[in-house]
Image 1 (cartoon, rainbow, N blue to C red):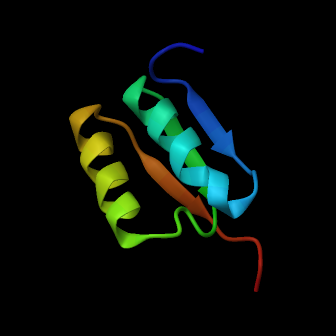
Image 2: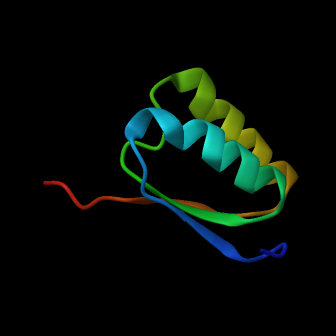
Length: 64
């Protein structure tokens, strides 16, 4: 993948953070299924990384 591509993360909930962190730090936009992370600190870290790497992170909600 190249910087600016999109990474879709549809894995078990407890693996979202590490995968998203890796993708974001490499300049990939991310679509992550709900819940994006399990802890607030992890959420804040992903927000920080997304701003630093100028990428978008989107939450996909498919369960109602």
